[in-house]
Length: 383
Image: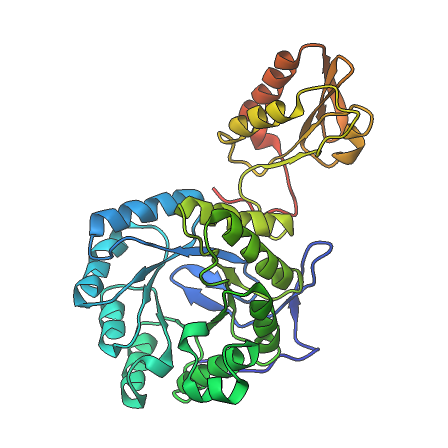
């Protein structure tokens, strides 16, 4: 085990794109075959909402999540039957499997024995020091990391009294207190999360704890809500933190389809230039110069991009005056106005069309047939 270390101004950092602070170099923790922290890319993860005991349904959902880009998946283990199910689920999936445990230390050991790649616990509610020692010994024997997950609902009463309720200070002290429980056993393969449903509180808590330890940080806004509002709240919190170089793995927690969570995660990472998965579409908001039906053209291009998996950047603009210049860095673009549609590549005009459908068809052909030619040196492309 590596000894824990504090973060200082001289700590090495991980390079970042323009406009984003370099990431603080946290310790590297392996979750199955996926690295979290160190110089690894920010990892995208999610959690099943199926009954873990229903192996077929859980495996089916994980396959959907894998297809959408999930890199680590978590399942709830509320009882022995759910723990036993891990042995059947794990061989049928490709990505690392995390067992989410509360209150019963025996379930953590069972999940580890049945093939979980990581345990998510709150040491403060797992059953006392002796039982924690047994969980730590089991995790160490199997080289499993532990995520110490604290949130607004798990803060100890004495800390609520000390800090006047749920707030960043009580979250941070609770997290560090629980980490120390594991550190007392010389266990440091730890990933840490401090989740609040308030984006501002989440930002403050993660900022604070990132200055106090070098464990990889799992970013998230708990109980974020339905897809639209939940994505916005998560983007505010995670986007701010990631732009400041804080965070090693993320989950957008939405009340909605799991594919929406992955889309939101990659959308946040792509907006910051930290990860790319699939195409990016940029389009102008329109103005008084628009002479085409821009909205329907954008919708049609979006439908085409659903069949494209390469991290290609596509621009759709409704003004041939400013469009080419505003989207010069796009791999492909289509700009319309004054009876002409321009097909561009890397800002250079490839062809002119007078018919909108012909222009759109030409863009579709190049995207579907030549997407493998696109090179994005700053990108991390995922299959």
